Image: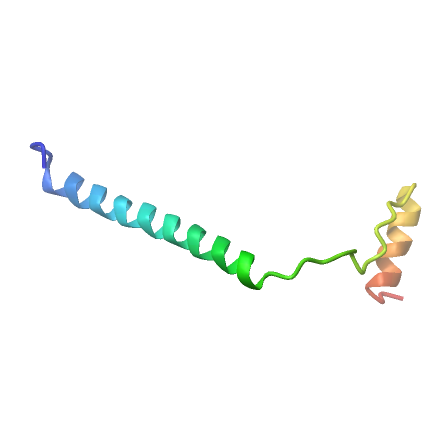
Length: 67
């Protein structure tokens, strides 16, 4: 292969395999998402941003049942 050393040639083949695998995975997951993916209408979690640090800590403690 263009006079490159065998080590570099093997490395380039391996990187080509990784690139092809990544492309195939992206294509497969895109098709899968289009066919079987659910579209959520609204998030089920309260998405209100706390206005202070204390409010955020209280929310975290209550949500994770740390009390």
